[in-house]
Image (cartoon, rainbow, N blue to C red; front, top):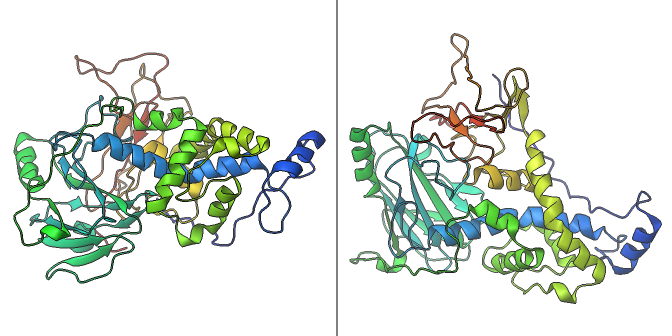
Length: 432
């Protein structure tokens, strides 16, 4: 199977304008109340609001994920306070709802850092040839660094992770990684066979993944305990929490988050669109102060944008034998809709050099996958996935979480079950 990475035009985006297709009454109202961008005609507020919602979806989702995963006193299970690793000791089960599309091939070591306060040192021990990677995601979900077997080998490594505004000297023996945002997420993965013996071996490695603030360099360091905020919902899936937000809360949070995690310099067009709606980085968003047509558009934006994000799955990537095959993950450029989709169904997605995720929800005849049926995946001789790391087939439910097999170990069947099979999970050692 030949795979090529889609190239997106880097030219200026086009602001959607009110056209002749709109009803006359709506067009007049828009002309009187809608924002003006530059010297151009009035833009459609609803389209602007939908675009703004889609643009900000990853940043808001990352923040709620951070809140849920750091709302603990000490590292435990999937959670750990800011600046500390949460090392999962076994594969996630069907009750795991913190991140969509988890895997059962590697054990996670997850940490959220605020490198705007001060840089942090990350220490990785000798891995003895074991496959691992430590992808670092910006607050906008872009992968900006990937220490690991493919890129840096499996020997001992130390990294000095600094924020976008930092300047200074790097400690001896450490390599500088400068993050594009103050909030970052390290979503480490260490390959494990799942046997008791290999669990033990990987646990020993996880215990030696170490994070310390730069001010503690050369000192004995004990992390401060975290604080639990009882108002944070740690049971409802993050995606559901984001999707339930009313528009005013969503956009006010987005504006606040953009103060410490500013948009990329290349994102001038969406930033201008948001400013025309009163959504400005670092400034409180007051929906009540906006003109009626903008208030109406903002209120409608979530209801319009969320289905648009999810429906994009049908149009993304290539479609091969019923599988959707995309290599547009981890680094999105100006493809904000793709970034929002991956946030919704696969938050923490790796770069395509590290993992590719062909996905399907139908069988060879185009019928929806169903718990009442049995399925066979066949690979022709010599055509197994071409990987140097590992590959696997993972089954998810319609919401991209593991399927609950029940106490009997058998799948629950039913006419309404829809499964998403993720095949050929790849981790290649080759150069980019």
